[in-house]
Amino acid sequence: MEQFVKGGAFLIESIFPQEVFTPEDFNEEQRLIAKAVTEFVTGEIQPVSDDIEEKKEGLLPSLLRKAGELGFLSADIPEEYGGQDLDKISSLLIWEKMAQGGGSFMNAFGTHIGIGSLPIVFFGNKDQKKRYLPKMATGEIIGAYALTEPEAGSDALNAKTTATLSPDGKYYILNGQKQFISNAGIAGTFVTYAKVDGEKFTSFIVERNFEGVSLDEEENKMGVKGCSTRSVIFTDAKVPVENVLGEIGRGHIVAFNVLNIARFSLGAGCVGGAKSALQEAVTYAKKRIQFGRPIAEFGLIKQKISEMAIRIFVSESMVYRTGGLTDLILRGIDRQGEGVGMQMAKGIEEYNIEDSINKVYCSEMAGYVVDEAVQIHGGYGYIHDYPVERGYRDERINRIWEGTNEINRLLIVDMLTKRAMKNRFPVLAAAQKVANELLTLRPKVGADDAKLTLQMEMVEISKKIALLVAGAVVQKYMMRLGEPAEEDIVALISNIVIEVFAMESALLRAMKSMEKFGDEKSQIQKAMVKVYVNDALDRVEGFAKQAFAAIAEGDTLRTQLSALKKLTRFTPVNAIALRREIADAVIKVGKYPF
Image 1 (cartoon, rainbow, N blue to C red):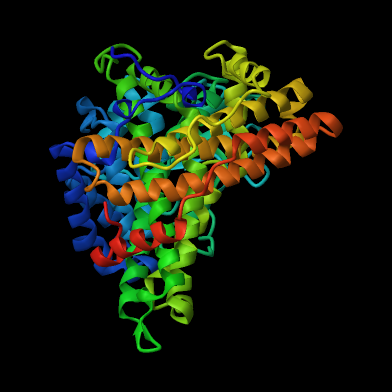
Image 2 (spheres, rainbow, N blue to C red):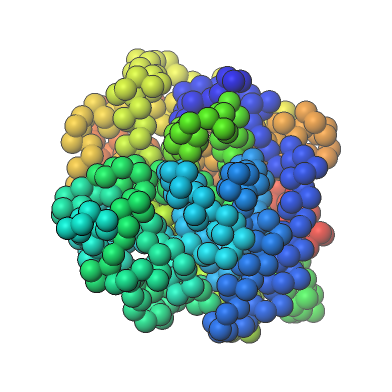
């Protein structure tokens, strides 16, 4: 197998442009898949978007079956069970392009192909895969994922649902309630969790028509109104023992790995939704005349359009970089081998830090983009007839499901710390090295140039700041770092780490594009990177100041702040001129330009 970059290693290693996958690297097959999904969305989904929103009887299942006929439900299902077993870049492209169909359809689609079916793909035995996956690949069976309970959201292992073996040993009897379950009203199967004998957290495949399974009324939600969200109630529900998914008492292995995979895909969906919102905003801005000219010509509107495009570019770079890393690590797995699903889940787990970073960054990016799209529309953005109003409501859930962004911020540092403690990579040693060099550290490059040399230096400095802050915080709190009282400080470390990955992903993509297409064709990407890295370094400095002020005082604090000031002493780029250039390029094509 080719040498792969370890998860989280971006923080301590220098990564080269040739080592990252970018959207400019899509092959012909991947481009055809993206085109086919876009045609399906524009031809089948968008024309009935109002009917979807009004929950027209039978519409969503019908559309999912049509998607199944075209192969869009089976990208991650093995070929022997009726799937296509596509590479993960292709899978991400399906997520991104399908998001153009709106939040309601995307929720139903994403739930089914993601958390609804992947637990069986990765953790099901051969019998379970044979029984369920072929029908899930076609949409004959629609999947759902039932983990959350009224008293167990982020604290999933606090589940109260119980499972007791029947006297004849043929069934587990489930009792409990699952809440906020996407696809509940249309699902044929639920991957769910219960505690065997009240203590062994275990995963089960539960069919809708099993005795004792019932649904509560539809939830009246803020957004994604067109998809089904209900509580699932188990009242002495009889689940055959052969429907235990994985091992008794090992349900957490299924649950946490599935959420990693879901975060992996969610970022791509957020990118797709944000691109649609940007296009709506630009189209409106070019048509809306005020003071005798289109508002797209106004400086403050250009500022919004450029920042929306920049953040989409950064997110897209992060998502497909992670997809490329994941494909590389999965390439060496024998698809016909024993335990292939577990091996693939373990491979995907290698990048759970990056997955959490993408989930946080891309969902917050999408929130920013739809908010600005509404603002550009002015009062019309608040009116139900305009797509951005629905997009604004639909997007909000992305920061909550698949682990809230707060939980994911904690996970980023927790996973980094655990890997360091297990010597999976030497992040603590790297942090100590930077701390020892604190008084002598200085930026090596002070001027902007055509090759993004300054931005490379700013990213490297940001990595050093991340290590300085993480090292200082770990040294102060040691084992107490994971306690709830210190979460706000942990989040500051995560914010810096997220910015480092974001900056570097965009930078490496632009540099690779420059090598491939030349400086002129990469001009807008270069402009985006210059603006983003310029602004991101300010944010990194701000997070670091807050962290240092929280953990130190007196001479120690003054020394830390003095070193930080020297590290971040860069001449800013002319962001206003660069933003105008970016906005003009976006306005000219009327959409995201890449």
